[in-house]
Length: 197
Image (cartoon, rainbow, N blue to C red):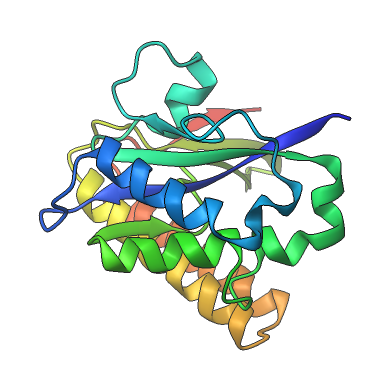
């Protein structure tokens, strides 16, 4: 039976004390004692919850992009297709013992920034100039001089999305949070966008 991977994203702060490896070992214990294992693929104690971290050159290019910003890392699990039967157990912040809720609580306990929406470091918007449609491709570079401020915006946006889920806010409200986050990021990005027709 095939499946897919799920992950949760973090960034270290000046208050984070444990190494990434120590954090991984702590998070493994939490997950292995939880219901999250219900649809998880088992590769042994050391490998069923694994880490992708900034600076690991052995990762595939697409994996490196997910942790391209200094001090970022992700904890990942592989799950069977059957995880959809219990999607809330993996994706819902309203469920106290879900994968994402465990990650969020873990971040609080260890002085980490938790990114509930990952790192949305690029997006495309359309714009009409002189009657012609243009596609603006916005890409946040990991070495942007304002990357710390941008990460704070991402973090705040993610927290807003968690609260929106918990309080049953509409999709329109959630979209407005993303629009605001994009505008805030664009206002401080070094390289604004690339036009393409």
